[in-house]
Each structure stands twice: as C-alpha cells, then as structure tokens.
Image 1 (tube, helix red, strand yellow):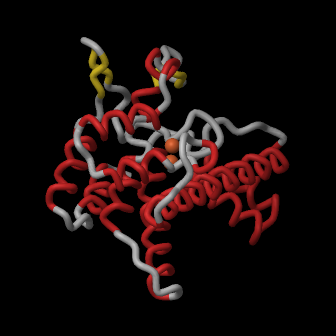
Image 2 (cartoon, helix red, strand yellow):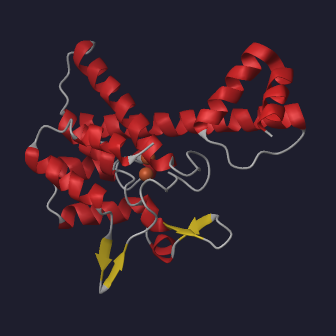
Length: 227
Ligand SMILES: [Fe+2]
Ligand SMILES: [Fe+2]
C-alpha cells in the first residue's frame, strides 16, 4: 500500500486550490510549534493506531484508502437513494487529512515497537491537524469535517452532511478492521494455543475465511505451511 493510492484519491478532488493545499500536507506532514518542527514516522510506515485497529506498518494508508471508498459509497447513497446533495471535494479532503498527523504522535522505539512521541504525549492528532488547517487557510467546511471526525467523542459533532460522511466512514472502517483482527487472533489462539503478535488485516481476513471453509484444522495446516 503506497502513497500512490493516496494520490489517486487526491486526484479526485476537483477544486485545484483545495487539491494543491491537501497535496502539500500529504507530501510533507509536519507542524511548527514555537521554534520546533515536528515530523514523525513516514506516512507509509505508520499504523493508524497503536492499538485496536490498523496497528501494523502501512495501516494508516490502508485505513485512509478504505475510508475514502466507504465515504464515496455513502455519497452515492445520499444522492441516489435520498436525493440529497454532498460535496465530494470536502469529503475527500476530510478523509485524506483526518488522521494525517497521527505519525507525528508516534515514535519508533529501539526494540522496533511504537509508542507515543513527546508531541503525542501533549497533543492529539485531531487538535494538531485542525490547528494546522486553520493556519493554512483551509475552507471552514473542510476544517469542520476533520474536527468532527471523532463524532461525539471529539470536540464537536458533525454538523454538515460532509462531516457526517467522514465520521461514519472513519468509524466503519476502524470497526471493520478491529473486529476482523480480533476474530483472527481468537481463531489462531483456538487453533494453535499460541498468541499471535502483529497481524495485518489482509492476513486476518484470510484466517477468518479459512476457518469458515476448512475449520480450525485448515487454519492449523496453513499456519504450519507458513512457518
Ligand atoms: Fe482520528
Ligand atoms: Fe481514522
């Protein structure tokens, strides 16, 4: 999963000015606070969270790509089923930017694991990106969509259709990922008695499918082959 996938989503933003503004942040996600500049893990390396969902390398880009697909499907439903109107540029910008500062809040430890960076100890990704978007003169609609992406657990609930789409798509993908990772880990434990360490969603979906068609024996055999 590469940055190219993000570029494809970016290129669907029709407004030239907005697309250029979003591109600038994606190319160089960093923030200046006082005389310090904070950048973090590369976008491609970063997970989307330290626990619960997309906890593996590349998880962030995967999460953004999946969230964009879900969001665009929601846009279609709003228009075709409910006859509503939705601004896809705002939705796409919101999805691309909503977690883009997460890598700034992580740090790679010597043992290869991740933990909160000194910046992440004091500020969360949502506050960071919202302040940067305001500093860079982003349209209010986009700032709102990003600011509201944690729904009732964030500083403000979604007040526009675009913000609602961003929130729901983000929530849906994080739950989808979290549940399949959980299920796969449980299945592997049942099959082998061993706890699995890091697992990607791709591997998790494979394990869940194997269990459904070949049972725990099939899972055991597949894991043996991979050893
Ligand atoms: Fe977030
Ligand atoms: Fe997210």
